[in-house]
Length: 328
Ligand code: SF4
Ligand code: MG
Image (cartoon, rainbow, N blue to C red):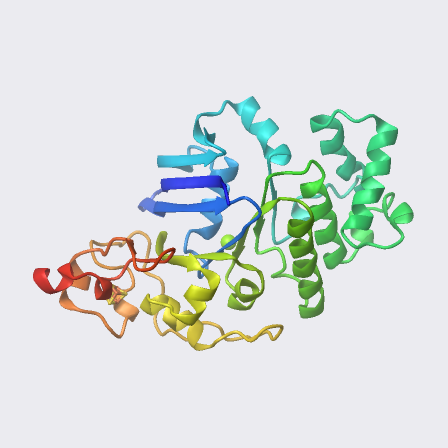
């Protein structure tokens, strides 16, 4: 499959009173056409900031992409003008968030909010856009679309609002849908329905999905390819089957210890003792060394690099480096 999104050596920093936070630190991965890539990690791992960097939503002076490239079909998104970025967002790349309410206008009927990108990006007339909005409402599985089109956000449930957000996101047939914890706020049944719908959308169009989650159950159900992030870095990445059957990084192994069972939600996913390191106190060590049962001397003084360990699998851990023996 052809590469759609190519992220190379992306680093995004935030500048706080306490110092610089390397929220995303030298992250590289690709999303191929029609593929679902999941970024998984605890909160503060940099997964949302990675997505925001792709969307061009990291704003100075708070933060900045300080290094790397983000290419969509070969075009570097970081060099686009403001106007080019605005066109790109919504038309080529669309994003949905955990809280649909925060992205919707409470005083506008939802139909009008679905019509907006259709009119702006696809230059549809009012009547055509309204008809398309009704179709889109049906496509995302909401019944009584003809009535719902004139409803206000507060009249809909959380699950329906997330469907509306997806309708807006897919309205212009984006090549890439970025979904940041889209089902985290929803109950299990609704979550399953929405994930199912996203899979269907991917099958019916050639859309790629970059799905951000802390929930390995969601990863198991959705992902073709998985990127595991820890403290701003990628610690492991690979095809979902390879990664679930043969996790290499002690962190991934820890995440999988409470193995998610399909369609069965678990409350306690993270059984790994300890915490993510303070982002202002990072050293040259492996960031996971405090929590790792396999920690060696070298882990405390040098950071492991991401290294290929299979055809598609990469891991950043001294356990898989022959050098480790030499440098201890
Ligand atoms: Fe553990 Fe060392 Fe691997 Fe880090 S590099 S995960 S501390 S074994
Ligand atoms: Mg987040």
